[in-house]
Image 1 (cartoon, rainbow, N blue to C red):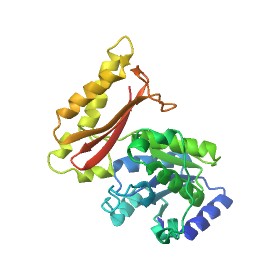
Image 2: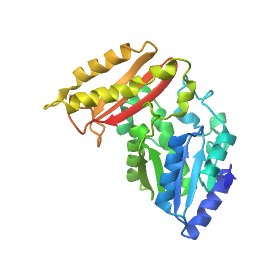
Image 3: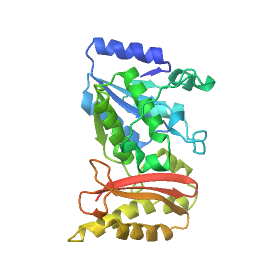
Length: 288
C-alpha cells in the first residue's frame, strides 16, 4: 500500500493510472476509521474489480468546520487508519496537509470555493452555515486530484451525498457516485468517528437517534393516511425529553429526491435529525 502526502504526488499517480486505463475507486474520509468506512472500501473494491485501484483519502478538512465546532479535537490516529486500510486491501492512502490542499489560505491568499445553492441550504446547511461550502470545495479538489471513476459515500450523511451528486451533475465531473448503506452498532447506533466523544451514560443516551427513527417509522407504517409532520415532531421531542443528556438540534421530514420538506408524511418520505448528546453532535437519517 502506498501513502501519498503531496498534491503533486497524487496527481502524478492518478494521471499514470488514467493513461493505463486503470479503473479507480475512491473513498473520501476524515480518518479515525471504523467498520463503516471499511464497508465503503469493500464497496469500492467491488465497483472497480481486482484489477482496479482503491484510494482512501484521510483529511480533516478545516473549511467545513465552523469557528465553534470540533476541528481541533476531531479524533485523529493516522497510524491506526493506515493499518486498517492496509488490512482492507486499499492500494493508496492520500493524506495531504492543509498547506497542500489550501495553499496560501493561512495568509489569506486562498479565495476559490465551490458552492451548491439549493440542496445545501436546509438541515445541516441551516444548522451549520458554511459547512457545505467546505464539503463541496474539498470533494471537488479531491476529485480533481484522484480522478476517480467511482466514489463511494455512506448513507448516514444523506444530505451530503445529495449535495455531492448535484455538484457532480451540475459541474460535469466524470465520476459515478455510489451510496453505501449506513452501518450500525448491534444496538442501533449509527457508526461515527464522533462516537468516541461519548462519555459514560452518553453512549446509551445516544440511542435516542435510532429510537426516534424506529418510532416514527412504526407510526407511519401503522397509519392508513399521511401523518402530520407536527405530530411526528412532537413524538420525537417527547423521546428526546426522556434522555436527559440529549438535546434536539433539528428534525426534518422531506422528499428523498428533492430534500424539500413535507408537512404530511407517508411511506417513502425521509427523516433526518441532529441531536446533541452532552457536547457531542450526532446525525442520523432513515427512509420511512
